[in-house]
Image 1 (cartoon, rainbow, N blue to C red):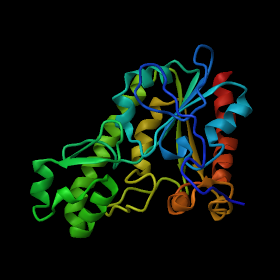
Image 2 (cartoon, rainbow, N blue to C red; image 1 turned 90 degrees about the vertical axis):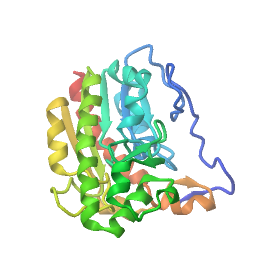
Image 3 (cartoon, rainbow, N blue to C red; image 1 turned 30 degrees about the horizontal axis):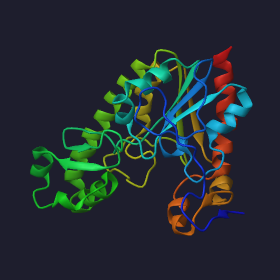
Length: 276
């Protein structure tokens, strides 16, 4: 059954800092003074509403501390802007890098918050020139802004989408170059990476990332795991999740415990091979 609690803080995330980073990560804090595995990622790695996200599950399987460096709604920028975090990830025995969406990063058309990457800070003159009738002061979040631009003009939106795809590849290559240890690229979604297309599907997750983009990164990683969540796990919905009544819509929009268990079951053997 779903665990529903009446107030805020329905699930204790034990927020903690690592090194000199200002980011609050999910705890309890792990010991990085000995051998450990690190996970860099977004909402899925963080495990919002999930009592035991996949980093916790693989920690039990591996018998090593797993440092959860997942950030809610993260893009590559949050890690590139925090050298303390990338250093912790680089020092791990193995680092899992979740493939994140391409919408939450600064680019030639708009800027995002350096730590809260889903926050839209403003449009550049280039974007205002492409969409002169759009009032960009109405937007606080990247997803809302991009969906509005696509509705305004699907053709003009593709110019922005191509910029985001190119910026994502460049930024992800830079991130991987800073992780000098053994890395595993993790695709975690309800479908495999789609083929490149000229019409972006903004309902896809990770947003705007296709198979060609993923292929360009695979040579920089020791391994790649494509974890496609089963329909059975997806159908469990919020089963086993912890949230307050007001959080129910948000909880329904993220992957639940069954999906996290599936990913952990596939990921742990990959990490174990790299640890040998």
